[in-house]
Length: 292
Image (cartoon, rainbow, N blue to C red; front, side, top):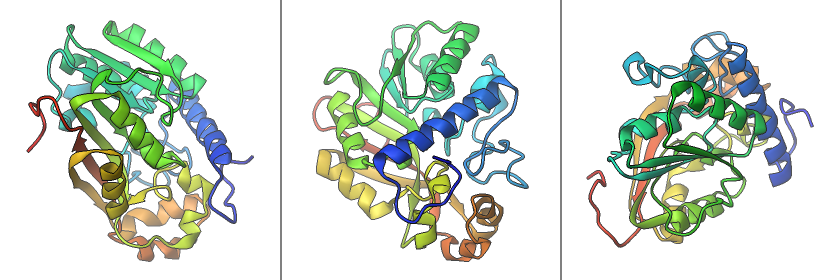
């Protein structure tokens, strides 16, 4: 299928998986060639879609990424910086869902130190190859990249202390299963601490029908109340949704046009789409390290 072609209904799980793999494989190849990508159409990072990509730009500062391969940052299609918000502690085990080129895994590995470990999980061959090369070049040993889908995490029960993710859960066609898997692999008292795109209010139907926006960042996003409900349904408590960026109509116009959606729809999404830090805790264990 053509991942950039709008379709007449919400993508099927198989179509969405195929489109995501194509999109993120392209992003990995772009990074190897020294080009960034953005949520919309694959044009580049901080200079994307006719201007700054409102979602992926300016998430990391130079001090934080010093010593990491440039390709790790170029391959990032995130909407936040979960490693700065997750209160990671030395010795913890962290899992990044949809780890891409590995930037958040490598940053997490620094935070948890040599007595901790950071796992990255991704389903895209090109991204995994890039992430492992970035790990080798960064000289980071307490990292392991796994191949698999975030709906079926290839780790045993109660294996990690913290689950992070950066603008990936919104891409899944079965978000409840993703959250249930995150709950399963967390130890009692473990933390769910992800950056994601979240919607407040109704989203115009043309956005919901666009594959290109599903594999970007917007159309697959959960409504805030639904996100909270699903987290509670699978067993999480202490659920919080903290906006980190709220997107205005002017942020969306070029982004929507690049995906083949009438730019007039930008007015309908004004203030309804946000990047947010979503956090929750698995009951039991110690609550130490959980943000207030």
